[in-house]
Image (tube, rainbow over all chains, first blue to last red):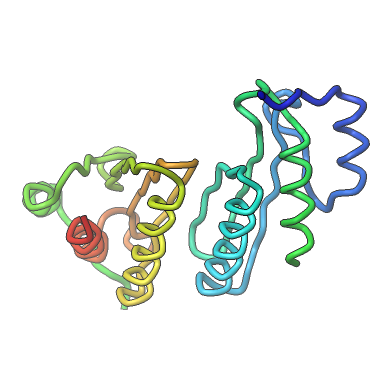
Length: 96
Length: 96
């Protein structure tokens, strides 16, 4: 079953519980940028996010250069944000 | 010492020995897109590239979503392409 797209009010409510994420793509995605000491630390974080992604069955769109990691979450099957994005964002926040 | 920027002729010569890379950013970078069966396979590849990057002391700008990995190589200290990019690209090609 395709995940349900979150209404704007629900999405905003979830965002209040998250840390440093902002809406992107006209509210159809959320995005957060992370900065680390160096590549090694950034990569260690990415490895942990990859494990989370696998556990959640939901994958980020992400970009890395050296110590920066830029993560965007959206749910293609919902044409926007779903609970999957918010739960993965919360789990990512909990790593830090 | 800052790495030397490759001349266009040298860069084109290196490109002949690479697989599927194309010039990007007006010739100041090279880029290749990779597609895998799924996230697990894409991530396995990324882990190997991360080890290479560490060994080479040179890091990619890269993007991943699910089974796709998009790698851009450039040398900021050279304001363009240097030998570091070509050598890392060659090593990445050799993984496949």
